[in-house]
Length: 259
Length: 230
Ligand SMILES: Nc1ncnc2c1ncn2[C@@H]1O[C@H](COP(=O)(O)OP(=O)(O)OP(=O)(O)O)[C@@H](O)[C@H]1O
Ligand SMILES: [Mg+2]
Image (cartoon, rainbow over all chains, first blue to last red; front, side):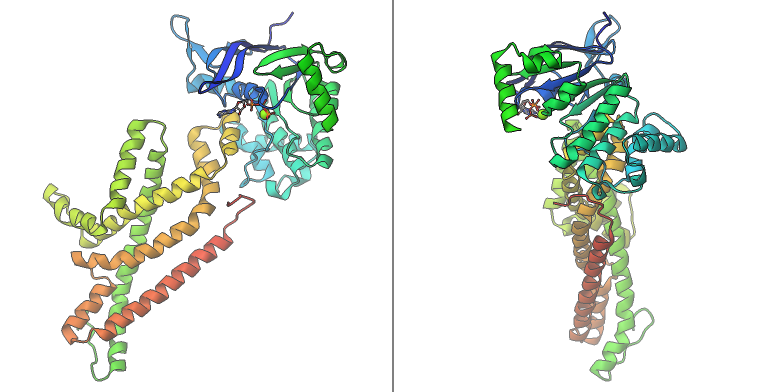
């Protein structure tokens, strides 16, 4: 079996004394599409934020693409906390889509997408524009390239957010409740873009969502998080129809009733 | 006679009209001191703000102490300090530069707070998106955070511009010939203080109104582009 592209090894994340990730063990294989579900506060966002290097860990080791994420090896081969240089190299492997989109409001749609490729990857402006326009074609927003984010609907903004992250050509895409901030009628257009990504690319995808139908369609595996641990994980058809754990059953029942 | 311009004391109106060009000479100096002082306050204030936001305590603490000191001591003390103490150490500045520097430094303490508030109002998600995209810290500050902070900063900065203009008369104590000083000299020589002082008050009122209108105009014209301002 292939090496995991993401591996959490006994990872603890605390805020002061409050434990959010509790000796978490968690793996994702290259190209795998994994959905994370679980109650509020179970640590779903924290897992993604740790991977995106937005949130440091307290204990344990995180591996991404064969290298330690939050540590680097010193001259003697011992692990020490990673410096900014190492974090920057590791960050190139990952892209993130935020619940609140977090587009840059003072930049046009196209500029939102070209800013990092030109500044970080050093890609010439013309090439970055081409790349941006191809991505805008893919998310169906080519004609909005010169608009500013506030001139777009939430669904359109989130599609720009996806294009912006993809422009950095990451190996791993992280989606933190990408449709939770959207009006119901706009959810579909965003999910369709994510679905196409899942079907047509060998990207590794990690998705936190409450859209259970969607999770069932696109994921290879669904993980149920509870109190900072993976309580249960299985292929979607199995986890959704025949959950083993009582808490998983209760959670799924509650979600189905609220829909 | 002042600046080679004579006054006409035959009547009140004639006197007012004859000293107007003299007062306007003073006004030019007042405006120059305001502009230079404001420019110093804008630049130095941004430096303070950046230093106070630094993650290292050895950087942020001294900046916090200096700005606190600048804010909590009277402008006149700072002015005297620059004017009388610096020359003892071989630093001799023209009176005008000393005055503008004192104004700029005191107000840099205030503008640094305006920058800080404007910068802190930029949502955390903007920093996180920049970090996720691997933008460097400096690039994030200059191209993501500052452009979003500026529309929030401009109105408050406008108020300080007007305040600086109203503080310029203090520079008369170090011999700067700004407008009020000019009016006082005219009064000393003609024994008529009422007319020149009233005229200075009137000119100040007009200047303040113009400056406020200018700031409002700028604020309205500035592209906000969906930047949430509250
Ligand atoms: N910066 C922080 N400081 C203190 N506590 C935090 C911080 N960030 C998150 N937490 C806490 O950590 C816990 C897990 O947060 P996390 O955002 O990972 O949950 P989640 O599973 O994504 O929940 P939700 O479904 O509500 O988004 C929560 O109880 C939250 O209050
Ligand atoms: Mg969350």
